[in-house]
Image (cartoon, rainbow, N blue to C red; front, side, top):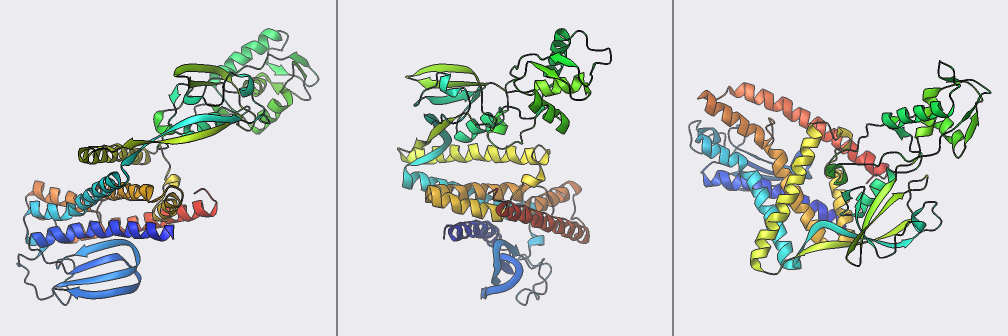
Length: 459
């Protein structure tokens, strides 16, 4: 049922977008020959006429379109419309065309603001996208040093390794990236470990090779560098990447064989470099700051288990922004949209710049599934707010200067303004068709990503 509700909300966003185009066109006296809800794929659910506009509803609801006599010369309602008629889109002034083309984007932005303001007025609060994260209890069965660290139940976690923590995901992410024997080491740690091995074993041959049967002393286990990540990574809008080097399969096996030993008798020949890599892979210490009785306390050199567990049970409390007046309904709703729009723009840039791979790109199937889950677990407040964010996302995507999107049409209008004449209609149509085909291919790819993520339970 919640998935159906989410589908209805998304379809409503598409309807609002197309209504924006329709109403702007009618305001300028432009005839609209066809108004379609859904993409013209599969069966037709409904068809009627409203004045001189043909209205259709397609089975594939997640889409829509508005066409003018210029686009649909064979339409029985508009086929006899004179070529110089003021009812034709192409006969309007450039600024009027631009308004009609951008009206869908404008409608999505206004509707998004309306949804957020409705939520603010009805629920008297808005999410801050931040959470208070507390230590609820400990798990003594987990082999870490947290039980003797000084942390206590009730402590509010405020930072890990210097990064402010605003949700449990960020805490868990940093803990898991700091686990024992993760198989990644830095060049600096390896160089330091080579020097330590040489100092303890001055008789190693000039080739720096440990021969089979040879015995050496091993340096003590030491912590590696702390895991430091950007705020974008913690916000989930940038893929985590490490500049550390991954151990080979043989080096990982050697690391396991050396664990806990002070000396080692080689079972075969080993290079000094392999020994250094194996001995460098240890643990990445955690530094956790908490708030206790309004005082900030910091606990250093915390170590996880080999499974990346620290042994703490968390309690999370969402932080809401209270809405106490009609003015706050407007101002705080606007602030909410601005913050989330900036995050979406940043995420889009990360995708375009390659910092987030295309394999992490998801679309309507994933959004519907996630939206349904959000409504089920968090209620309609979160579902409506997600719809507002999707509405802004539709506006951003449609503004991209890509032929076949609204932004592409605006780009062609700008080129006409610069050239001082209309562009060749056949060239524009040809380019638009190519990019439309590419967008369809991208849509198919994204749907495949969504389905794969659902099947593999990544969503």
